[in-house]
Length: 386
Ligand SMILES: NC(=O)c1ccc[n+]([C@@H]2O[C@H](COP(=O)([O-])OP(=O)(O)OC[C@H]3O[C@@H](n4cnc5c(N)ncnc54)[C@H](O)[C@@H]3O)[C@@H](O)[C@H]2O)c1
Image (tube, rainbow, N blue to C red; front, side):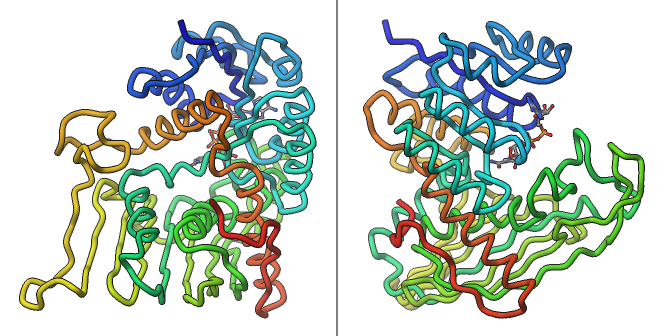
């Protein structure tokens, strides 16, 4: 029998659901060295926690994350609560000697993330941040193609993350569902919420970013705050766009907004190299577009690869060739990778230190937007994200 891995999850919202599903499905589709157990779900609201526990099959509930962290029978702490809770919980979990998984962004700003990394490194505990888009099979395949050198020298990286859900000026800020609009809870707007994903994927695929120049805008300047009932200034960036120089000499454009009418979650990326280009679109997530200039001239063109065959990343764990998977599977892959790494004493990726590099970029973006000038990105490791 496999050793059990008792998981305590904090937060039973959107990410609480994706993580619970991931821990349930991972051992059914992957041969893991440890058996994940949904041991406890933690929410401040008892009724919500009980309902969530019953639905997902948790063995018990907790209403205070401190009790969860202190529980001797909990092996791993998984943080799926809003950004302002990450540092306190992650640091306490690390000090308690427990492996910690944390949702992105790691902290509300790079300073907060640094303190999380410090605590985790001092405690020597395994960590991982849920930058799940790396585990879309088509994106993982993009990484293989880049690493194999098929693109040749890379000239351009182009990426956007577009949404349209905050256009109404009547939308309040703060509280349960709308904490993302409250700067004190979120830390920043689309820069930390959406662009953090684009930046993590970009540095994973194309190496470190050295400098950025950015512009941000807050289109709706005040909104009613759900907790105070008062009209209050909006402190988050509604839209953020920046130019970047990668260490490998390539140039990049990044854009995110919640004001692109008609777009719900349009995350796209394109890389143009000397020999070939690749492009990917979250709305068609199982496809990788590939153009190879070395193809015979008459037949040359963009191919749309349906990333569902058994020799494609992760796909031999699922159905039969040609049948695609979706968004939730990216979390299943990440849970499986984490548990495998933990059982085999390997580092899971991205760990907290890697995720801090993303926060250094988002911090530089916000600083540049303020100063209206190029800003050098602080690099902790000085190397590409693994
Ligand atoms: N990886 C991704 O693609 C992705 C997508 C969405 C959100 N996120 C991240 O996940 C985190 C959670 O976001 P969400 O969309 O699930 O939010 P959500 O609002 O849907 O859920 C948050 C949950 O945390 C609970 N919570 C808040 N404070 C708590 C506390 N002190 N103790 C226990 N529970 C507490 C809330 O009651 C709620 O159940 C954020 O950091 C966010 O940035 C990541």
